[in-house]
Image (cartoon, rainbow, N blue to C red; front, top):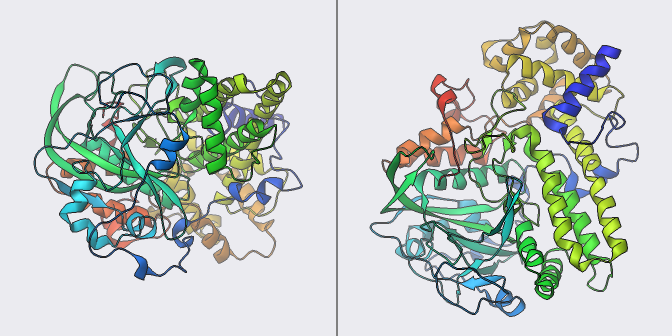
Length: 587
């Protein structure tokens, strides 16, 4: 038993899925507790496939089918929050405001619609997909023209980057076009990324290139269909405008083409939005922004509650722990977990040098610019804790002495919330029902086997979803289960398999077919692997967008086996050349 205890300590406390520094978790291997309170919270449920979540009671007849006539407005933001008194794109130090008015810079040359999300257009923006073929669509969503009533804004924020305060950052190449309220009553903020300089561009040119824009478009939509809270992407427009980039910061500058993504979120406020106001001593504005965020996005918090800022903080702590556990459950590594990239609504934003872990490796770092591995996948929970502590510090000026103490107590619960959530997610991925004493050990043992054999994270769980217990018992593991074949080579696999099959019997009258169906609903067959994105990017840079669209369609149904995706090898062992791929912050 001592050996087993050491294995649990090693894998659960040191490695990827519960790597939170300074917190001992050996007393929390039961995770969720007998009251199942974590499961009662709808925001912390095990994977929800969002494809069928949309309210379909509103008729498609309400969609715009001809001219593009979106009614967007920044009026609420402008009326409620302080605006920069200077209204031009001059790069400068900005004070005493939340937004600056900033005009997009038109793209040069021919514009091409490389990709469009039918789901976002029709289900969020109330626009028939056919409208995307119009010239108005290209002009409005490339930044070349402004929608009626749009007052484009750039947001002022700061942030801790790689652990250090970086001062003023802000939207350096993004323009908020306005808010849109759709037929379901949902309010969304439309933002162009890559649309030119703003007062916050620092030394940048305000542009985004094709490779980074393809990645953001595909991944934000892929994450949505994996059931993970995220910003959305409506369109990807590519131009002939040349931009110059040193992709790996090694002096090798090359010409690339500029592109613009239309992305949406319920809000783009992030931890850095509050940090810069607290750091600048703009406390009245800090209170105003906090009150606005709470009123607009946390309706359950009463404005008259003297502890409203604490309740807000508690909400963000809970939701951030939930978000990161969801990232980890699909092997997603954000790459740049700075406070300016962490949403106050706890959605995934700012897709840069991200990556989905292929071979299981708690030290996986997708971002080649992260030399020290600060944001390796195994440290994302720690990064979340650090960022939440910086949020707490930003709130300190508006909290009483007693509330300071309570905020620290709230933050102490973060590791426990995270542990419970990731435990439940991994149990679901293994098809386990109810709670049994040694579930934590069973999970930890599998992760250790996967690490030792460098088995594919996604396809190991997917293969366990597709293979029958009869095949497992007879070790009848065919080539289609290639990830399991890698595990079989480990001397400990036989012992783990015996424990797993015994545990499945503990599911009661659960039929094997039902177990497989249940597991297939939470274990994707397709993720946006780097090599898949790179293949699509190389073609897109040559004006060939077929693979972007194939990936887009594949990733809309990540839990379903698809003929075209299988033919493209999206569920096969990654090609050898994929090992040499690198991604950086340069975009």
